[in-house]
Length: 211
Ligand SMILES: [Zn+2]
Image 1 (cartoon, rainbow, N blue to C red):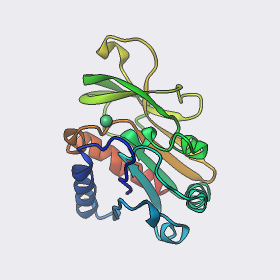
Image 2 (image 1 turned 135 degrees about the vertical axis):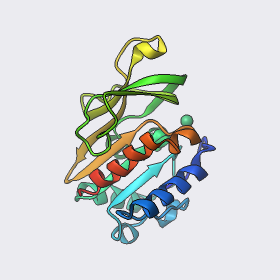
Image 3 (image 1 turned 90 degrees about the vertical axis):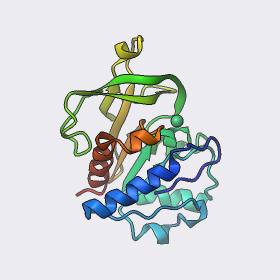
Image 4 (image 1 turned 180 degrees about the vertical axis):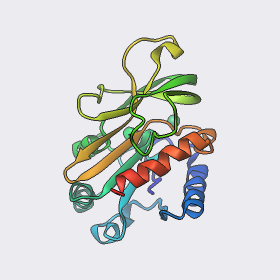
């Protein structure tokens, strides 16, 4: 779980780390290693993990070409990637990362309570959520709509923010032999403490790990 930032730094990062560590302890089905140290991400280090999780990262993180290859190969050769919230506001200048996370952040026009529609309740990350839920969040839009490239799990109910259009909020995709999951929620500490968000993260880890 990498929480390094080279741009905006979310106040919710400490809570995100605390929540993930707590979920690992309480569920007992996975462990979490957190780091802020970009230089620690190497092929050798990754070889002992099943999933790499970019949590609230921002900006042009200083990965070397060798590290970038290690991350791409880690996922494409069969492991998992998770990105949450500003993981799409990260590494705009690395096109392979854009393909891995699925889209790049454009803007956040709505910070309010809104309705999220569950498009696919069959993924482990969305099972049990029902067909929709309301949450107070900073809702993202993206430079282009990822829908043609990914499998959408959640989308914003545009009417609930007085808008129209298609706004995917969480998705999965295959990446070579591996799996990639992204969820745009996670701006606020309250979201990380929300059992409905925690359920999604635990399910996403399970799915991304191929379990
Ligand atoms: Zn945010």
